[in-house]
Image (cartoon, rainbow, N blue to C red):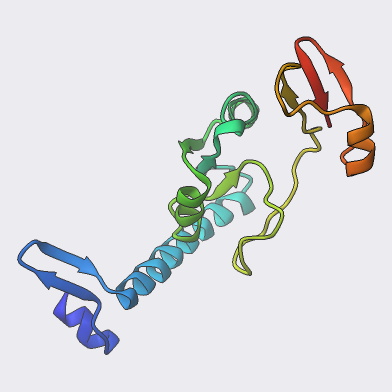
Length: 167
């Protein structure tokens, strides 16, 4: 570890009686190292693809609302066509999975789009157009009339069993 710090020219680790942990510089070196190793893995997979072989590993980060049916169905379809792909699904929170995405622990993150892209290092792409709906019981203070939706610009109200829903 000292040799690695010497080569980097900066302190990479905090050492204490309780153990060793990374400094901010150490975190940056770890992140870049993991990304470089992941690029090498992907290069090997790309070379196999030039020979008509689809194989490799895909780790999907799945936010709670997408892990129910969307991701498992997509994985089943991919595996039906490509038997040599290994797929792992990691459930988590947005912040936790975004950290893993930036550190090459997962390859892709599937879930609801955020209003703003999380940063220049992340590409956020819509893959489905699913109407968003909310429900509320008629007895709550959150009742919304069709006029409220029209004034708010949210859209048209659909009547559903047990409450109101809006797009």
